[in-house]
Amino acid sequence: MARQLRINYPGAFYHVTSRGNEQKAVFKSKRDREKFLEYLETASLRYNAVVHVY
Image (cartoon, one colour):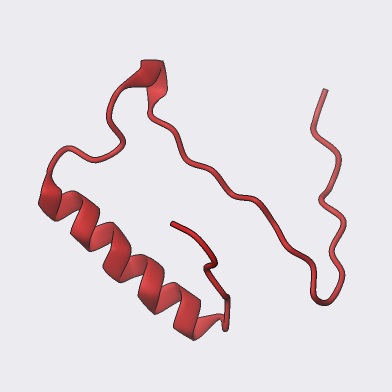
């Protein structure tokens, strides 16, 4: 059964999580992690998203 659609409304907060498969590391190296943070910054600026915690 498919998951229900997320309810969207102005000012809503969303919890997003990322985990490695089989409890493996998400990033293979320090550089991978740094690149992800660069992408996160770019996306948050582009879409005017606020990242409260990372």
